[in-house]
Length: 244
Image (cartoon, rainbow, N blue to C red; front, side, top):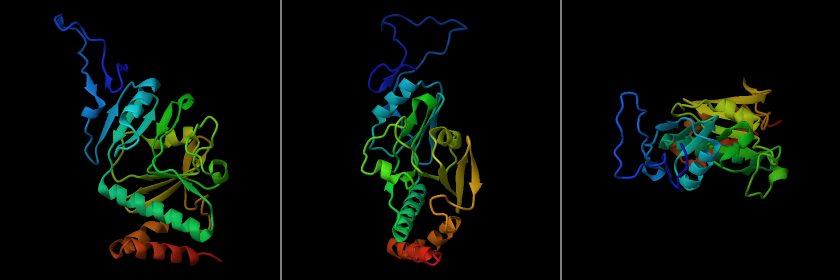
């Protein structure tokens, strides 16, 4: 693919009056599509192959910041997916729980949502469901723009795997240097810590080492029908109950 404008990707077109020669071994003609024509239904994903870094950045610019879709890029493979409402519920519930935990523990943090994190040298880019700075919060406090060649990556990323994704995100996270990833899937919250160039599952979070984080989904499910305020009060009480 080659960028031919702000929102379309196509090979150089022939003159409109020039017929396309039909040969048995001719390559399949490429089709021009504008990104606004692509409609990825909730829970579905689109995988594009052989996307250069320049094309990836052009696609990001065309898609804009205010959108439902999430992207991931890994050495020429680009995935575009749209989350389900269930996905968004658990993303919000766990994200708010993280903020409530931090407040009870009096830990400063910054949250940057589904910011696009990318690094050309690593040929890697993605948008987590949410991400947080804790250990490096003081280094990024108040920042609105980031460059991973100069700035530290988030300390914690959150992934909600309600639907399976085409791209394995762990190698992308590893190349971006994000030290901890929480992955919610089918009622379980798994903690993965970066060791070298790969993630190892752990029962203990580096961000909240004193807490039994894998127990959070059961608490969320217990209070799901009682409203957001009841859940937040329960999370705060749950944290206090684990403190010495």
